[in-house]
Image 1 (tube, rainbow, N blue to C red):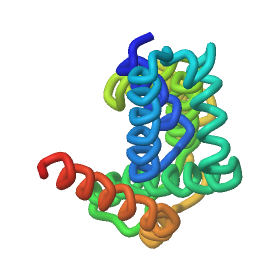
Image 2 (cartoon, one colour):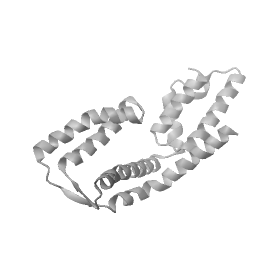
Image 3 (spheres, helix red, strand yellow):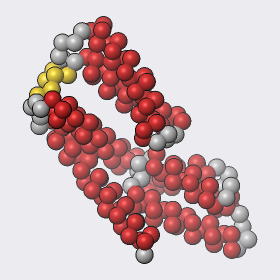
Image 4 (tube, rainbow, N blue to C red):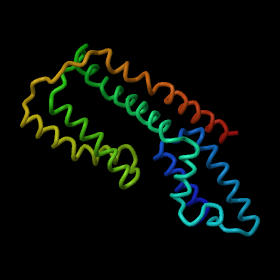
Length: 189
C-alpha cells in the first residue's frame, strides 16, 4: 500500500468511528509524518502500521476516543440530524403539532436502520447514495405498515420536540464546523 492509500484507509476508519474532524486531522498529520520518517529511514509503511491498516486505525481510534465518548457523540449527532429532518413536516404543513402514524414511524426507523447497517457492512457510499438505498427499502416498508396498521395517529409530537433534539448535538456540530473552517484556513495559508 502507498502512503496515500494508508492515510485514506485510516481516514475512512476514523470517520466511521466518529472521531471529530480536528482530532482526525491531527492524527492524519502525525501518521503522515511517521510514514515520511520511515520512508526516509529506508523502512516500509508496513513497518509503521503493521500488516493490517484497519486494525491499526481501529486501535488508534479506541485509544484516542474511548467507546463511551464515541457512542455519546454518535447519539448526539444522530439526534441533531433527526431534529432537522423532523422540522421539515412542521414547516411544510405550517403546524405546531405532528401526528405520527405507524407508517411514518416505520419509514424513519427502517431508513435509519438500513443507513446504519449499510455503512457498517459496506462502508460509506456518500450521503445521497446511502439515503437512496435506504429509501428503496424504507418507502415500501412504510407503505406496507400504513396499509396493514392503518393511518391513525400513534401520538402527537409538539413543535418544541425537534428543537429539544437539536440541543445534544449542537456543541458537536459547532465544534466540527469550527474545525473545518480552521482546516480550510490552514490549507489556504
